[in-house]
Image (cartoon, rainbow, N blue to C red; front, side):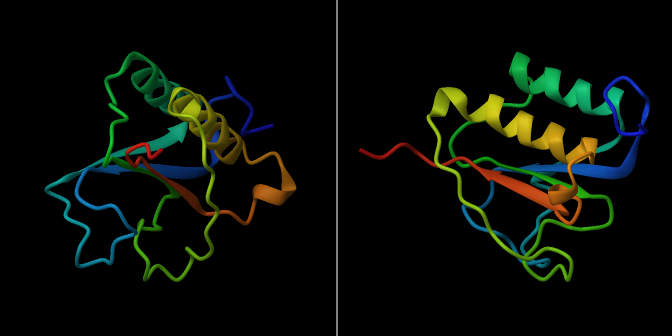
Length: 130
């Protein structure tokens, strides 16, 4: 399996995007590359480096942060012709990083037929509410 962890290159290359500028999905004109960061993920080593940075806190998951994982070439904006649909997952803050990383790992692995049509996900961290 090309996409299996430890096997090197992924079946599809991905890009991780991050920003603190918006609480909603942005349009292309609103995606401010000066306020965003981007990381290419084309191998398991790339993904595991990103995963370790999240676990260690180098990639900070705080209120107002959006972290997106999209197939390379698809931008995390609402106009993208390949990006449609929305899932909402409510989770306890302490579980958010682990659950998000597990979903990202499943997507980049590409092994589950039900996930092969998914071109990306976005994690939007919002303040807790009572």
